[in-house]
Length: 145
View 1 (cartoon, one colour):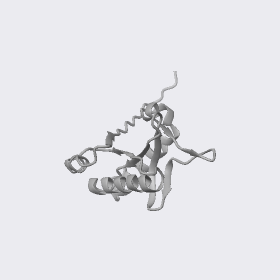
View 2 (cartoon, one colour; view 1 turned 90 degrees about the horizontal axis):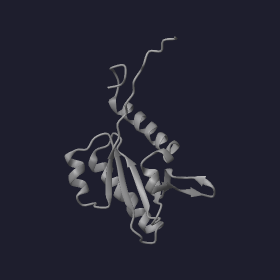
View 3 (cartoon, one colour; view 1 turned 45 degrees about the vertical axis):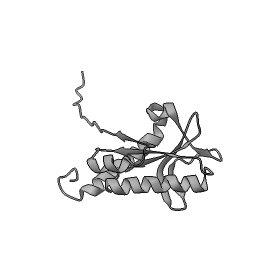
């Protein structure tokens, strides 16, 4: 449910996850990911966010700092776990056929929750990790001294 208690919850989720994508890119160097992965630059411009492929846009595409392996990061938006895993593996397969000359890719799913469907779907995709995000928003009253 939206902040006002009404409305479509999927719209609120999409908005929040779109903001999460922006936040990750803008603060990449401050995230856990930055230790292991780097954003992709082409012609001097960062192209990792909404990376364009022949079959759609990858939420975030990065490379392993050591191996240069491509890593597809998909945010689990309002779709099901099955849809998210299908989308992730589709992008991984496309990259392996069109960009890496067969070199294997890796996948990461960032989700608000982990469920049994995601667990069982990922049993067959061992080169994928899952990260859960939490949003902690607090208001503190300001009182002038």
